[in-house]
Every structure is written in structure tokens, then in C-alpha cells.
Length: 222
Picture 1 (cartoon, helix red, strand yellow):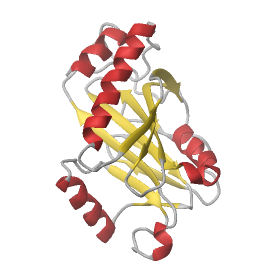
Picture 2 (tube, one colour; picture 1 turned 120 degrees about the horizontal axis):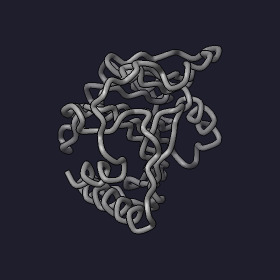
Picture 3 (cartoon, one colour; picture 1 turned 180 degrees about the vertical axis):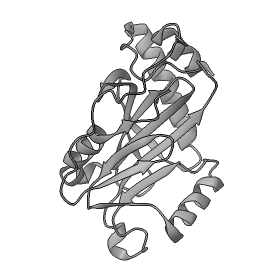
């Protein structure tokens, strides 16, 4: 609730006038070997051949583990290729693209293409502290440590306004992971796209991840 209040203040007053159902920017050309993943009631993003949509036995296992830890299953998860088969090669790397949607009421969130809000240094620090504290609290159950937390910022991604949160985390006896989370407001709902991979594998994933983010489009504009 506190986050919603802060967002409302920073984004300004919510307008409930008619809104054009047009993509802020057209879809990019699909790269050779990539797949365009369509998400019902959301939109789409492009996935490289090194990744796959989580499904089957591994999805059931992952959802069950999340439920045990008190987490809801994400709407959609993409991961390094081979993990669905639970083969050894599927565990050699780590990468995730997750999409989660929260449904509210009309006007609970700002419009998708609203102007970028401005924040004072104090507002930025307050918002950052709120998210940092939430992460630390959520990690406590798994023993995961928050290694570094970067300043929060509002950005435009392909014409869509979002709140960008980034940090480094590390689970016990595991390599550190870089996480970027983009929260898009869409009038009566919020879409959160989270991208993460191991820091030691940045050379392998970084370029493709930039293309994934650039390809993301919310077509169900409210």
C-alpha cells in the first residue's frame, strides 16, 4: 500500500479519460532463431534460442518450491535452455525472465505512456529504502543476501513508462546474480518484468537480455 501511495504522488493525478489502444512503439523485427512469446492479456517479448519457456515437471517443481517459501507462481517464466528436461547441461548456467501482473481497479495505476515523473533526492532515497527493506525481508527465508542495491529510477522502455529497480543478490553457496526489475503501470493493473542472470555469465547473457527488454511490448493498453 505504501508503494502505491508513493507511486501515485510521483506520477501525479490519474486521468480516466479515453485512451488510444496503440503500441507506443512498433514491434522490432524478429531476429533469426528467436521466438516471439505472446502473453494473454499482456503483450509479447522475444526470446533467444539459448532460452525456453518454463513448463512440465520443472515448472511444477519450481512452483511448489515457491509456494513453500510463500511466493505466488509468476505468470510466465523463461529460463536457460535444457532446464525443463532436468538434464545436467540445463544447470550449467542460470538465467530468468519473469512476468507478473497485479490486477487492481480503474485508476489504481497510472497510464502506460504517462510522462516520466521527477523525484527529489529525498524521494528517491525513501523509495529505494522501501524496496531494499522489502527485498531483505523476503530473502530472509532462503538465506539469500542482498549484495548491492542501486538507486531506483523512472525510465521509458520502448515508449512505456516504468520504475526500474536493480540489485545483486546471492543465495548460499551460489554465484551472485544481477537482477533488473521493470514495473509498468497500466491504469487498472501493474506488469512487472524481471530479468536476472549470474554476474559471472554477463558476457553470455547481457546482449541478449538488452534485446529481450527492447522487444517487450504491452499491447493490452488500458
